[in-house]
Image (cartoon, rainbow, N blue to C red; front, top):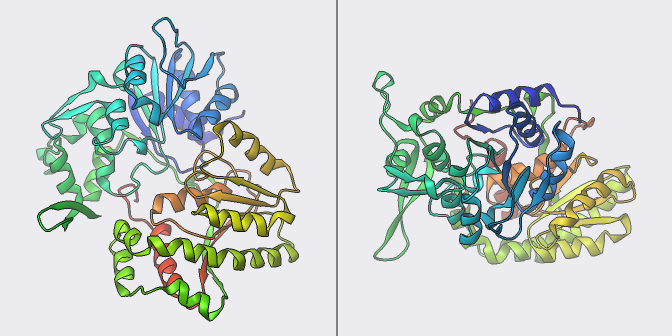
Length: 451
């Protein structure tokens, strides 16, 4: 593969840092950059921690992007004492949280650990975060890193297009484990010490106490604060380029109203009220799940036949291919049955990891396959769908990260057309109001990383 200039500069950034975060947007080329950087450093033995869907991607990428021959293995069971983990060892995030796998990896020494989709380790309460970085003591005043997979490597590179998926405190475990000096006080800049997790949380997040019962309240993050200061703390540790920075045009986003019967519209509206819109504005996704959970499936099932009719019209008008993103399995089933005549490929949580690569390649090369059904979480990472320039959300996620990741699947360096993303809504319904609010949120997320 011929690397892009941004991949070479990304590789140089990584190779110059023992620990670092490459936070380029999806499709910019982080995987290739990390492997080129490993070549720069002459790293012989590399541990890659990635998602289930990312494992075959990395296995193929090692052959595409590295100049040095290295054996590659995907580890699905704990290594035995006599096993030699030379070359590139690829393991899934769920696996490193298993005690025997964690112990087996800790016993090895790697030249480099690469944590792909590193936002999976965003809370020290999660076993996978503890396995990756270690266990915190006294609310983060101390960290027992010797019990982590990362401690067995000479350095750790994190890769994520969404390193802060929900709130600024998502980045705390990474900084505490890999760049603790950045959390120290800086009197010259009037920065306090935020080594402790609670201090970091209240310095960079707006927190409200939420009652979970009559006798218990828990802190809930509802926004960010002092974000310019946090960005400055991270300078030099992070490199971020957007798709626009590397010449990839961002998608155009818009709503697509669908006409349904009055009875169907009433069914989709349920008994929702203004509280739902207020929850969206406040970013209270858990509240939305509580209010809308039972109704989301019904709404998706109502929209699916109307979406299928609209897709038929688009094909009749000359559209070549389309990606339809959905949430619920039964919504995917309806779409698959309705659009079978157009050649349907589908990827969801039941798709084996070994089948993802062939499905992706068939979509990119087979013109007879005109509809790709993408379950939002399962197909939101590590897949190229850019043979289509049109993506419709039949259903949406309340998590901005999921929507952003999914929408960028149809963009890359070879995309010659303007990518268009539409969110399908039931006309003149509460669904239209909800999706309109969500659209504004996930197309303009104000994160720590925003300049």
